Length: 282
Image 1 (cartoon, rainbow, N blue to C red):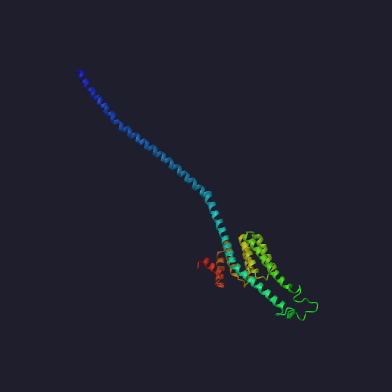
Image 2: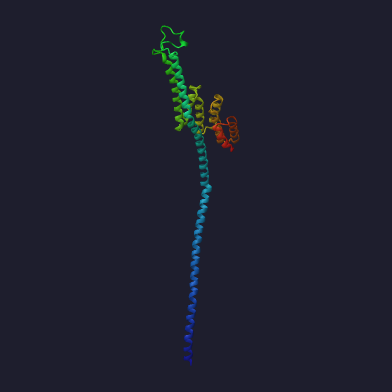
């Protein structure tokens, strides 16, 4: 009897142990899955922390150095753009006026030569001196056919040529960026040829060279001198526009606006006035 009961308990006990073993397997699997998930979450959290640390470091760098340097660079670029805009305006105007100025000079030269030829020819009489010199011509005076007769013509041509060469040399210095040399050359030109038709342009370019050197006060003084000395010059509107640009660079916004408004009123049909209207927002 005892053996039979023991024999009956053994299979039941074995079955119970097997059932407990099978029940424990899913529990261990679930426990494993939870641990793996927690590990992955921890890894992600660490990566997020690292990214946040890098972001904070980047923001700190930008606030302490990067933004300051960036703003400084932007301000410098704005100043450079303003200077280049001023140079572009004057160079564009000079390009438009170059052919006209050249034609005027050639016409003037041609007119002078024709007058000299007419005076030397005496109205077609090759052997007779000009009427204005008839009373003064004596036996020793050179005739129109002699080597000394046309001496004044080359002198006039030389004067015009020297003016043009001096002006062109100064303008080349400006275009090459040699602003200090250009200022000196243009000022020397005005002193040497104050009555030259190129004198207002020389003074105007001297002022623009000062603008390019960021000598805004000096540029304003030069342009105002141009306006006072040559009030009828075609360069006056452009000189006013340049003055307004200098005042803008000096943060004198109200003065710049008054200058632009004066330009529009005094020279409404000029190209400079059109640019002034754009700046005024009209």
